[in-house]
Amino acid sequence: MIYLPHRRLAFRGGDPEPPDQGNLIAWYKGDAGITLNGADISNWADQANGFDLAQGVGAFQPLLNVGGLNGMDTVLADTSEKIGPATITQTQPGTLYAIVKQIAWTSTKVLIGLGTGTFDGWMQFNTTPEIRVWHGSGNAEIGCTIGEWHVITTIFDNAGIGGFIQLDKGASDTDVVGAGNLTEIMVGAAVDDANVSNAEFAEILYYSGGHNAANRGLAQDYLIARWGL
Image (cartoon, rainbow, N blue to C red; front, side):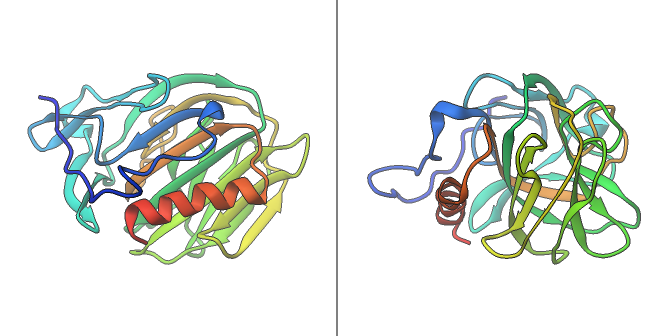
């Protein structure tokens, strides 16, 4: 079945949309483009370019959490659940945003996989509550609070600023994170199905190009406004 989303109240005449759509490669919203298998999600449609995320195995399908964040639906992927990957080829730099809540973990896992490696993408790191961006090397990382929703921003740009990660609109870190380019995207695990995380996702945006501070602010403000954070 195709899930028909609940809509928010109008925002400037309609549902808000992200900025810089000409460079928007992939866009996943927890309250839109969801195909259900019972209460579970078998397909999460990309709202930008058709890079849909699918999961055909029922035991691995994430759960639709109705009204999961301020009355809007979210995607809950626990310790066995993940969706994707979708094949996307894009050369660095690139900018990734997501509204995510880490539920718990006891070892290093992957929240969003972005390459062919076992840990490429966003790692939830087990020594302290933090998210670490990894794409072959380095350790750009930012502290987070388990059980709370955050807007996380990451830039992959080793020909320029390196790897950049920011929590909400506050603290950030920059470091080398490897020269790998985007090849696939997977939500809830690495693209090779390893290191399944325990997290909930509201919205994900992936852009071509490294967003500057002004563009990051626009994308962050969009996410904060749309989800009432």
